Image (cartoon, rainbow, N blue to C red; front, top):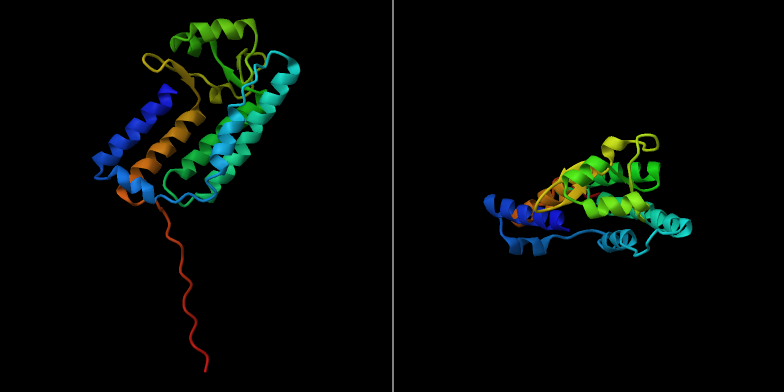
Length: 194
């Protein structure tokens, strides 16, 4: 959560640095915006994952959230930042689908100061994350392998960084009043028939 807050603060700072104003974000029009909270809600379903059935449901909901979020990103692809958001979502979905959850490396947990999370994952896998083992992890470089130490104390994936870069770009561009990358083509007027 601290990482996300830091990303939003960075986006606003950059927006102001490039001459933007926060009030201009109100003019941002997102297509199919309802898909974003739906996709995020599926990722936050509070199941413990302590039983095989609960883990299966939780991981299935997590995987199902990504196509929903990707459709939202595609619907807004003409806006600044949505191309990297789409790519980051695809990277995360790929590693989560291949591993039936997000692998987290021992080194990343230790380096990010999350020893309590490490001890919990050593006892049993979480609902969405599990401690990576070289023997059973596919696409480990795309997993949660990037440690973010104090004050963030979080582990992130390449996909997370790509998504957040897109979010920063979107907010900064919206603050400048120029979030649209490609203006829609106008149809040429047909000559009047006589």
